[in-house]
Amino acid sequence: MSKHITERGAKQVRKAARKLNGRTKNIAGPSTNPATNLLIQDILLRSAGRLTRHTLEKGLLRRRYDAEQAHRIVKNRSMLQTLATYGVTKLATRSLPGALLVGGGLLAKTIYDRSFSSHEARREGDKDLAEQAKK
Image 1 (cartoon, rainbow, N blue to C red):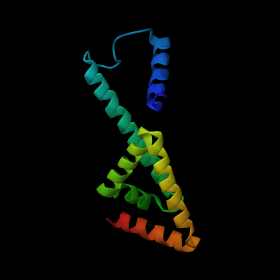
Image 2: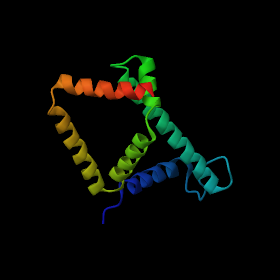
Image 3: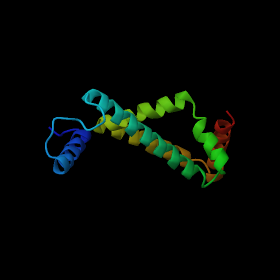
Image 4: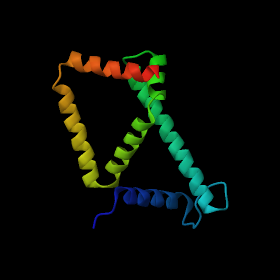
């Protein structure tokens, strides 16, 4: 049976860490408690991921909007939007069927959007983002 992709990734990280530090029973970190170290690492990784995601989103939006409007669009995302994207991401990363379902849904949405004229679709997207920036 095939291992989950995160299991394979964890194995690679473990092998690289062993090459650097040798085999050890400790989780690296400032605390002597491994649970605390894992919590610290989790918070750091999630924070770095969030900062990276927001930076990339603002950078992509700045190709079309000014810096202030891009900042407001990213900042004013609703809780429903945030939870929906989190849930869809979780579904897509947990299993191959989930990834196929999410990928198929994104493909269907793209095809649906392309069924409209490019000006009409762009105008609709601009309107949605302008409303989000006003909140």
